[in-house]
Image (tube, rainbow, N blue to C red):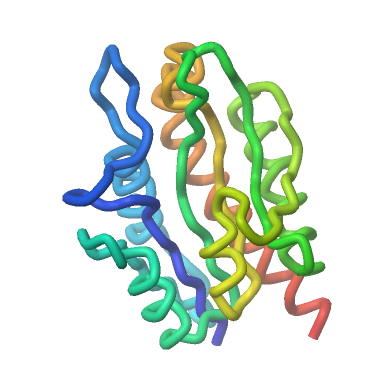
Length: 188
């Protein structure tokens, strides 16, 4: 049995993450819908998907990491959307812990699939070290973990692309998860 943790980035009550000023759509709302759609999809019998959400407290990230580690997944994915503050940046990137070779490989798989799906600029995979954005999650989760940043939510064109390709994006995430499982099978 392969256990996969899906973590909705940010939280409903404490911080919904980045937001698009025109639509009011936040990364928490967008990704809550993505993860809900993934839960409804058909998965192989040997794959167990469990969803985690940050509790709406200042220690929410710590608490969700503890919950994910207690689940003991084979892989963990955190769903986000980027923001630049200017609304001008565009593109797709995937973050992984700089010392995780499996994380790096899964990030490469994810990056290619997300760029192919959305057609946004390829900003590449990003190795994350201590103190950088996303480092707490990537460093503290025991399993290989990655953070998806498929588009800039504060860029109107990026957001329109993600919304218009929402179904394709969900299917792409499922494909990424299945390919990641195949990758860890080949390692162990």
